[in-house]
Image 1 (cartoon, helix red, strand yellow):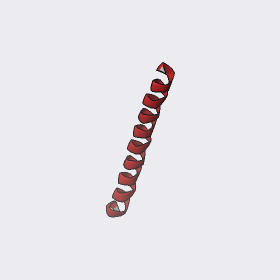
Image 2 (cartoon, one colour):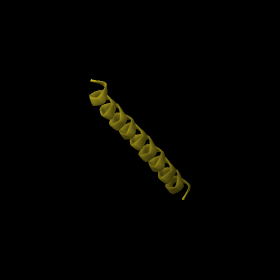
Image 3 (spheres, helix red, strand yellow):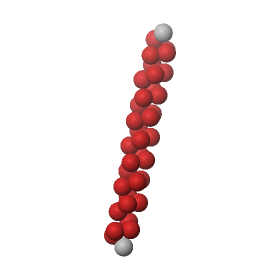
Image 4 (cartoon, one colour):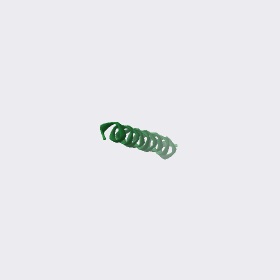
Length: 36
């Protein structure tokens, strides 16, 4: 059961981190455009 649950948890964490990076990257781009 744990072996099946672990990959799901890892994939969930990776998705969360990816969304966080994308949001941070988008905010930095919008900030640059705003200054421009």
